[in-house]
Image (tube, rainbow, N blue to C red; front, side, top):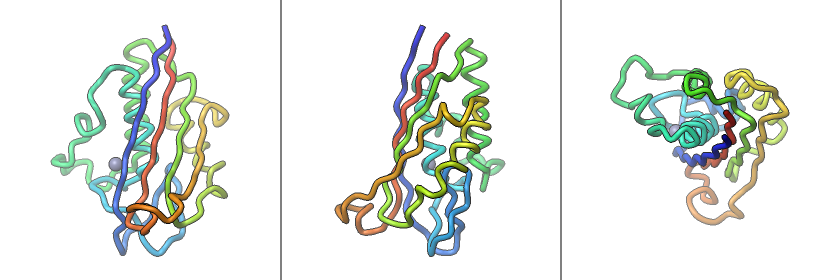
Length: 157
Ligand SMILES: [Zn+2]
């Protein structure tokens, strides 16, 4: 049995926070606002995996009202999603993802992101796609108000 899932997430920039994408801290003037480490890429991937399993989204498993997960590293969220997949008898075949950010340029960090994401999911780096594009200066991403991410996941049983 093969299942696919889709995930989308967006976080606004906030001054004075580190920018974490795909588990990697990236030098930038701003970080992202959020209850966890605000790793928008990991959140999109988590929702793709949960969606493929037919489970509720990331907000159900990691609600912003839960003080115990404040500042949590989102790689832990991916680990939990991989565990939920395993519980249901699924293995993750691959995930693919796209970051949409006007700045900073993140592609040089993609190999390390793939390493971190794949380790959290219990798969190999070549089973993880990380791509990045700008929004051609249009919309909230184009105005550098935040970063968006989308992802798909393919799971097999
Ligand atoms: Zn998020």
